[in-house]
Image (tube, rainbow, N blue to C red; front, side, top):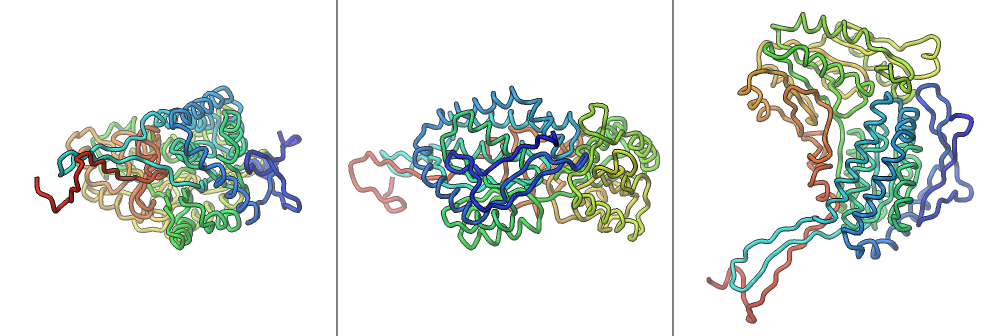
Length: 496
């Protein structure tokens, strides 16, 4: 792939363009640092052109019947299904997740596009009784207009499709800015929609930095909705900047997700879940299990089994199906994780396993970090801050009440889990855990597209993606009153 890494322009108004004088950048595989694709570094004027195209295309797309929009989405899902293995290999090559998870990333995209296509025959409003005679009340959904979709690198096909498919089915037009280090995955998704028949200007694609392309998108007054997934610090900036234009800003941000294992849990099941939750995707999920809260009664034996199991994980080229853990996504990501490991050591946490960058042979070509397990105390930075890597903090607690208190005592609230055989305790945990997602006897990852996804506290600003509520982000609600009484009626004044 490296010898023939393709070049991509910007997609604006249905044409792939490389504007004169544009700077370029390359994406490189975290496996061996070889180039995967070459891209245009977009400028503010390119964003203006993309928004021009999206604005011009909006009336036609808005007036396209929603079921017809759904038919185009179904074609996109079918095209992606045919190309699943090809795109999955690209996900693994460009981002670094193991090939089984690369396939899962693409399958989630297919599933969600199909799910949203069905909304083209729903887009449900409500019918509501009137307080007056001979009067009919209802609500309808209408598109917002031009939408900016700004996406991260860790799910390089599924998160873009969560946003793009939902925005398109609602009748919006889109300007899509992907994370720069997975721009080729993003470009291939855009090509799928092109092939499916999305009209020119309905979906536009501008690569480049957040500081240039992202800010220009947020500042353009014609962009009415911004859908952003990324880190908390950047999310705050996006929120404040968008508020200046009174825009709808939807944020999906960080997590510090706990798994509680009680003393009555199925320990074999819990072990499987913790290993996958903490070290799948090399911990680079917003839903990754980053805190393991163990009841004192099973602490020592469960930790010993966990260390033994994780110590046997195979780390290497994620294209190889025998590999369990691939590289982290970039040099910057690697350094951030290593810095947090050092912070943990300085805080006095005990390294039970790992804690180092892997070196020698093929490891020297990429960004490989040993899966790391800390025995930590609640309140240490490594138990509070999002590391976004293969680092798990294990915390001992004495009972259920302490476990919940520790689980909730962080600034995030995305995903949570508890392992227990006590049905009463399980239902109590559903009520007690401060998170947008709670799993019972399963790890903190594995969202399904037909359920809402999102969190509380600093995980976001209250919205949800996926599920039937995905359309809330991309539609306006209009209330409609139809009076067929043939006389003037006054709500709250006329009497029945």
